[in-house]
Amino acid sequence: MKRIAALLATTAFLATPALAFDVEKDELTLGFIKLTDMAPLAIAKEKGFFEDEGLYVTLEAQSNWKVLLDRVIAGELDGAHMLAGQPIAATIGYGTKGHVITPFSMDLNGNGITVSNEVWEMMKPNLETDADGKIKHPISAAALKPVIEKFKAEGKPFNMGMVFPVSTHNYELRYWLAAGGINPGLYSPDDVSGQIGADALLSVTPPPQMPATLEAGTIYGYCVGEPWNQAAVFKGIGVPVVTDYEIWKNNPEKVFGITETFADENPNTTLALTRALIRAAQWLDADNNANRAEAVEILSRPEYVGADAAVIANSMTGTFEYEKGDKRDVPDFNVFFRYNATFPYYSDAVWYLTQMRRWGQIAEAHDDAWYDETAKSVYKPEIYKVAAQSLIDDGTIPASEFDFDEDGYRAPTPAADIIDGVAYDGKTPNAYLDSLTIGLKGDETVGQ
Image 1 (tube, rainbow, N blue to C red):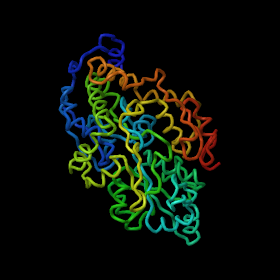
Image 2 (cartoon, rainbow, N blue to C red):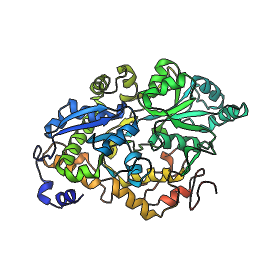
Image 3 (cartoon, helix red, strand yellow):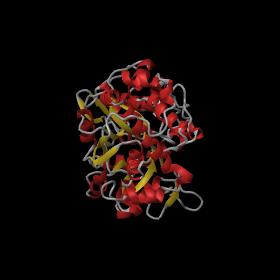
Image 4 (cartoon, rainbow, N blue to C red):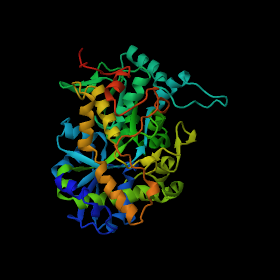
């Protein structure tokens, strides 16, 4: 990172006008998975933001998250739309090892948890309704607990899908289950199934295959990004029960990942990429989501998400359909720019690390300083700030659109914004872990 550091130290560089980054590599191939939150990449390409920075970008859909990560680390892809846990896990050596960094957070929220029609009908007697007979939200996993207990009594495992072991979806599904008193299981160095002591058995299913796998009865529920929750509603095979916005208001989701080597060898290119992605994210949220209809049309194309535009629009335009016909306003279901969504906060990285520790993917305890140091080795707000400042300086985006946090940590998330009523402060990860009821804490290890 020496060349990036040198550029960051050059005050004249901060005032560089638009189009003046002398990129080291102008032809790039970037990877993505077919989910609506890859939108900043599609928009940066289709609206010409990459070309404005002198970048000629090819976007390639990847078959799954592991292939995507492996190809970035191998240098076959220059960067990619990534699960936020992937750069962190790769850097600490959990799974595929490689030093991957992120200068840009792609979005907030965007996921949901869906159950089969059969499970939904079994849950409904456990749910509260309002005066009009509508089911109250958010729905707690406590309503699912008797269903899982019934399955267990009948000798049937309760299988659920998530997209990758270090995905937000895995941690969100686990968080929701645990908040309702359901043990989602632990990992250990000798057993990476994540099903040690589990009440619900979670396993990996690629996002586009979620609805078909649910319909086949292989799984009874899943956590995934859009459009694959709304696809279950449109197909009439399942019911989304909770969104991640309801689990943790404005939670961090995907990131743009590159290797440290790429950033070190191509500092100007890294900054140009970050500029283009910031512009794309700002376009997506501009004027109270006025551009979302156009974004839906772009994302529906086969080279991007390739799902029916009506399915994508169900969540991308500020609504979300739960049970068929129960469409509710969720204006922040997909957030790409507001609330500082694009800023790579250290506290976001720390949260992922706490969940890895909570469920045993990090087998041993670490002090708070380790969490801070690890977060800073992966999340790079210093790169983001240079790119954003250059957009301010050349008049592309006004300074009022940004809120740079000097220490890189978000303000603590209040208890009222998280489904289990436990506040989160990224500066005190061990205290946070100690406050959670299910999962490892302190010096505990699996098997204790």
